[in-house]
Amino acid sequence: MNSSASSKVEEHFTTSLNLDSLRDIGAKLQEQLHAGLHKGEICMLPSYCHTLPSGKEKGSYLALDVGGSRLRVALVRLCGRSAGYDQSLTESKRHDYVIDEAVRSLVGKNFFHWMAQRIKDTIADEPALANAQTPLRMGISWSFPVEQLSIRDGTLLMMGKKFKATQGLLGHNLADLIDEACAQENINVKVAAIVNDSSSSLLSSSYRISSARIALILGTGLNSSIYLPTTSLASYKFGRRPSEWRDTAKRVVVNVELSTFGKDVFPLTRWDELLNSAHSNPVFQPLEHLTSGGYLGEIVRLVLVDAIQAGRLFGGTTPTRFQPYELDTETISAIEADTSTSLSQAATALSDAHRLPANRPYSLTDLHQVRRTVTLVSSRAAAFLAVSVVALYRLRLQSESAAGYPSSEGENIVIGCNGSVLEKYPRYRERAQAWIDALTGKAGAVRLEMTGDSALVGSAVAVACQS
Image (cartoon, rainbow, N blue to C red; front, side, top):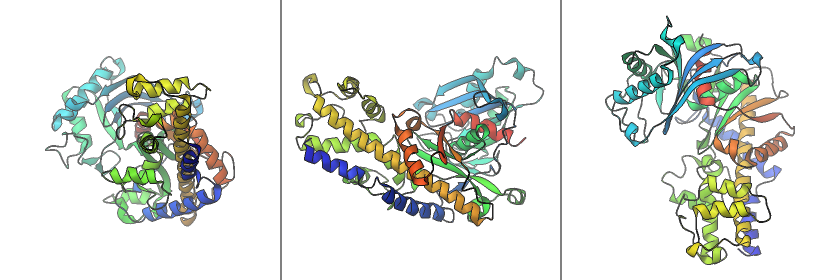
């Protein structure tokens, strides 16, 4: 890639990375987020969690995290925030089970019996459970659609992702299905709370950190949750909730569905446009396309393909496995992590996944160009994520003020973070934090804080908050 072409690529990805441009983008995004509180069926969804933990909750609970590719089960013991961050909770008897094609193909109640059997496998040798007089209360982080009727109850909706568990069971109570399957396996447990992953993340964060009011999940996908006054949302968004809930709830944990925002807000390069033009649903999750691990590698690949086809990279030859989405985030992460002059680790990561013809080695010049492209894409992503976080922060201030609550603008808040990109991608979180500090004008006013295994812990906290 010659210097002129390289400069043009750099200009495309950096032209909006200045405070004035990012503030303008953030203001537009905040308007979209605010509009989402009043309209839209797929965003700003209030949960049944209307209180955050005090940090004084204690006890042992069974926690489940049910996702598209794995089931995780653990006993979670909450010890209280006063015990300190690292001692505030413990996990034991944790097991991860793969949900493969065979499991996804289990029809109807067979899937829930499979779940119950895995729960039994996990806690079978726990003597305290065998002799318990009352059922162990269980919290579930459920990563699929459900029409929730209470913190414990929800009707089963289509799960997607090739799951057949809903066949003959659509509209059935999810908690009852799980309780029934566990009873048939003689497991003395009972579902007490069902939450989604974004709510789990905020509950987990706020249990450990009292100033956590927003949670952020960034891995393959993107989402967020936020604690807002109930009056901030249109009344229809609360659905068929009982009057007791409406009378009691003053604030509520809201599933933002952050990935769905950002259309016509963020400036796009022609490679973003190429990605969208080939996508089956290009406008459904615009912000996810720009920031998440599911798309960073593909944007990089599209830039590199242009350079290859113009004969400016790899001698004009395309590496193996270089079709759409085959350049993954793990590979580009390894490339960016290599700061050596030789880029030997980057060369290994790239050649292991994508070989040149006749196993020709990558030249150092090409490796530098690839690494620079990776850094441009990930740096822009971190900046756009920072804009999104600050927009959420300001939305919360706006909503609290409109509801008549005292201003908390001078208070520092924590964004509880979870997900592989924030946890593992080199310098991503640090870059995002630097932009957040610049946009708020105060270092640490809004702080990104990794909170570990939020889905399991959050589902246990959801149960504890009902006690």
